[in-house]
Image (cartoon, rainbow, N blue to C red):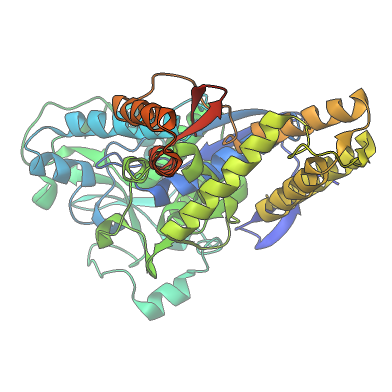
Length: 488
Ligand SMILES: [Zn+2]
C-alpha cells in the first residue's frame, strides 16, 4: 500500500503519487513576520515538517520544500482594506517595517530550529518577488481576469467559475451571506486585491514598488503609480517561480483555506491555464481553554514561554504532533506533562537499544526479527494512512512492551530494532539524543547541593532535589559515587 493523503480540495483521501517520479514539490505558507509566531502557527509548520519527513524517510522521495516569509502586504484580518500588519507593528515599535520583518524573522527561525524542523530548500521573502507578482497581475489583466480601480488592481471572481471549490464559499453563498464588505468600485463583493496603490488610506505605505518596473519606489505620499502586492498573489508568484506552475503539495493552517488559498487557486489557474496544486493539506487549529489560539484574541503561547516552564522544545514538538493534524488539539498543561513523560519513556527505550527494562533472574522470552518487522510495518501503514500518528505511536508502544520484557533472539532481531528506531527518529524528529552542552549554572548549583545531601545520606532531600532538577529539564542519575546529568 502506498501513501494516502486527505486532500482538502477533493474532500477525500487519495493515493499520493507525485507528478515526477521520485521527486515531490511542496509549498508551505509561512508566517507573516510582525510578531513572534505562536505555537498554533508552529503546529501547522510541524504538520508540513512531519509530512516532508515521512515522504523522505518512509518513501525515499527527494522533496523540494519551499516555505515563504510574508514581509509585506498582509493586511489586518486577512482583508483587502486596513493596515499592513508589518507596517502597523513598525509604528507601534517606532521603527521601520524592514527592521520589524528582520527582528521577527530571526525569532521565527530560532523557534523553528529549536523545534527541530528540517530546513526548507528555499525561504523566499515576498519583498524579493514583486516583479514576479507584477508579471502575473499583468497576465490576469490581459486575460480579462483582473481590472483596475482607483485604489488598485482586483481579481474578478466571476471570471473563475471554480471559485469556492476549495473552501465551499461559492459566489452564491458569499452573496447571500454578504461576508465581504461592499466596495462600490468592485464588480463583485468577493473580488480581491492583487495590488494596492499608494493612494487614499494607503498613501502612507512605506514599502512600495513601481507597478511599471516592479522596482522599489522611492516616492512618498500619494502616488498611484506605485503600490504594494496583495497577500494572496505573493504565494502564487513565489511558488510558480521556485517550484513551477503545477506543484504536488501545498500546506497551511485551516485559517488559510479561505480567503488565502481559494484566492491563490483563482489567480494561479487563471494566469497559467491549468491546475495549480494537486494536494491541499490543512492543519486544524489549536484551542486554549476552549478558545481558538490566535494572536488577535490575545491567548497565545510562544515556544520560549513553554520552554521557560521547564519543557524541552522536543516535548512541545511531540505534543503538537501527537494529535492527528485534522483534529483540533485542545492544549493543556496536563497534556503537555503527559506528552513529556511519553516522549521521555520512548527516548529511554531507544537508548536501551533492545535491552529489557528491568534486570531480573526470571528467564525472559525471545523477540525475533519478524516480530520487530511487524511493528515496523504497522508503523508505516499508520503513517501512510493520512499520517495517522496515533496508530504510529501505538505501533511504537506495542514494540516497547514486547522488547521491554524480552531478550533479542539474535543479531538479526537487534538489527531490525535498530532500523525501526532509526525510522521513528527520522519521522518524528523529537527523539534525538539530547545534546550534552553546558549545564546551566542554576541546575549545576542544585546538583552540588544534592551531592552534599547524598554524602549526608539525606535521601529525602536528595529526592526532592532530583525532582527540582527534573523540572528544569535535566535528569540526574546516580552512578556509583557520581551524579550523571542529562538534558531531557
Ligand atoms: Zn500563502
